[in-house]
Image (tube, rainbow, N blue to C red; front, side, top):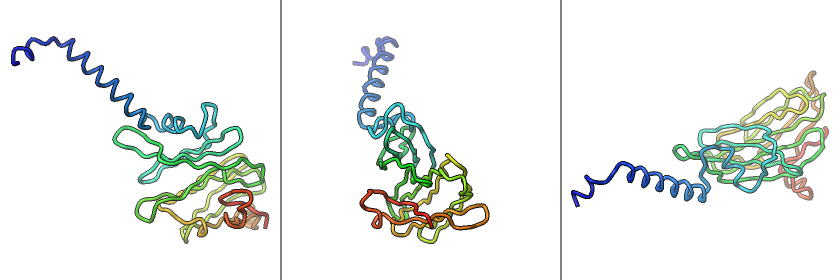
Length: 195
């Protein structure tokens, strides 16, 4: 036995290492792990290769990507394990031509490990900024047409506790949100309505 190990050529070890690396890569890829977050998102099946990246954000535990497909908006939540990425959940929403559109979002987990995030696409040039209050944690972001500010909290917050308001440059309220239950017929998580 001792003589076999000493007499083995470095080429054999290199070949064995390459074979093990290739097998490991295939197995990890099959399990959903990838070297890049975007590749892991594409491999979920929620989005296609032609999808447009609307934005992305990070939290303590997750990386979130927002995409626009031909007829849907997609939100993909990814988790990093060492140097690999894996998509852990995806959310879909139908595209809309309303003045303010939720172009992605999700909420899951709890106050210890979770995420709540909302991406808003603004199609109204009168809107200057948006305030979103999620369970008393308020965020204000300036907006402009065809831009989508992303609001993110490092905890899961129930959709009944998320309220948004959109204002013009003179601080006049233009839109406010309604909750999922009020707009269940359209299967929207949150809908903006004119005030």
